[in-house]
Image (cartoon, rainbow, N blue to C red; front, top):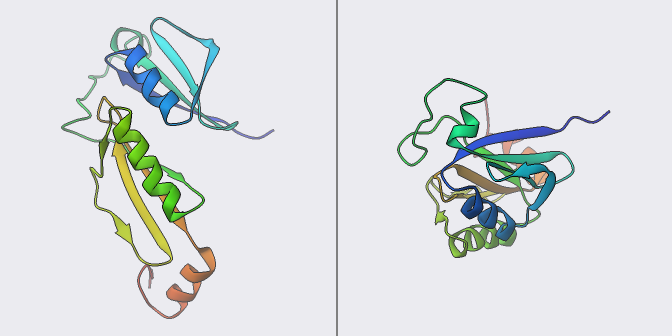
Length: 146
């Protein structure tokens, strides 16, 4: 059995957040959605649960940090090309997000950008040429761990 990941995010407006993630290409799974939560399917294995703050508190009594001023996680999705990364960021901005809250990365063999959703959650998008990365690491170049 393959594993699935359900990323749970607290949001201030489920409708606005649902529209944002739909604009990013996710589909809403009505079976796991209601007026306080939307289950957004990014792929067969990746689902994002958008939970209004009151619903979030059903799962944990911990304080909900303001994602615009603090960060606990950076979520990263791999994409098929550098151009797809740029398109994802442009799409996020057009849907109400903001571009590049983290530094752009361009190592030739690896390219990455990022965007924030309307609540400030950071999503990185990256592309990597694994063969070129391995060659660069073997030569002791950028991205080398040794």
